[in-house]
Length: 111
Ligand code: FES
Image (cartoon, rainbow, N blue to C red; front, side, top):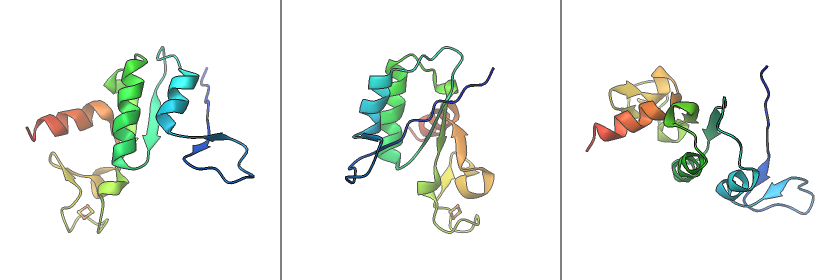
């Protein structure tokens, strides 16, 4: 059975915001989701994704369980400028959504 838990949080809440406030990493640590039979999907700025992946790793999530969106690397969005090139793929035309294990392999190829 598929079950989704969606938690909403913002860095700085307005007075009427009914959900969580603070860093997403703190929320994830507070909720401490089980990595068993689970995946994560993270979208946001690269620095947030980096620390979200570290937090999920601490909770036992393998890179293959984590999916990230990398739209922040895009500029033209049509495969022309090359800004989003990542290890031989273009984020804009190949998919902005990647398994984090694949992203790690891309990053290792640059070392
Ligand atoms: S955003 Fe320009 S090539 Fe992908």
